[in-house]
Length: 274
Image: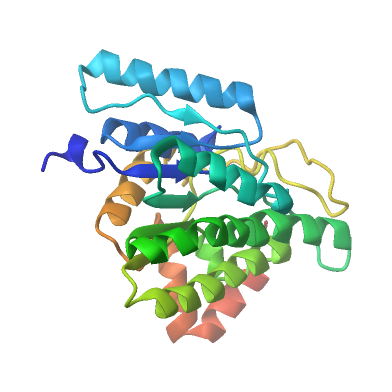
């Protein structure tokens, strides 16, 4: 099977598809023949991503590339998700792969962070992914086929100063979806948790401050991986059905460091300038 045809006839529902990692994932899935359903809050940006998917296919002569469907969605609006899932299923009759990519970040000291900011982070990062998963899971279990993908972060295993809310939401994802994987292991449904390190995206620019208001500034990192490179790695891990996939630059070594030398990791993060 060629690389471009890896997801031919596979229905992939992707959230957070309007920018950053989600946008790059849309292009990669499209190149590999997936039947894409793109979701995010910003409909105009989804239209741009959709047009680019079509343009990429035409430019490369890739007959496997498909025209995505656009389904605007705010994962924080939990009550709307079952209805959106019905609309998504109506397009193809099923969802083969759900990619929970939508997310939001927040920066602030614990002592200064308002509850509204903490609740917003969990509403999007954790409860949104849970609600999306529950909306497609029963149908997958009935077919004994399907894959749930969660785009988490290395902070799902690592504490980070001034990012307690974000880290906590990613830790929660790890526990929830590890538990789900154990439940559905014999039911034909796969669960993949992806933990990227630093990746170039808009998540820091769109992050909140301690009061839950937009910060409006990006945290630049020369070490950040390009989103298209990250997307290729992630899509390969999804195709391989991996249970968990960690990747990144030198920051990926922080996970084994914390596991085998927790005192050293603790010493290091106390002196980090973040």
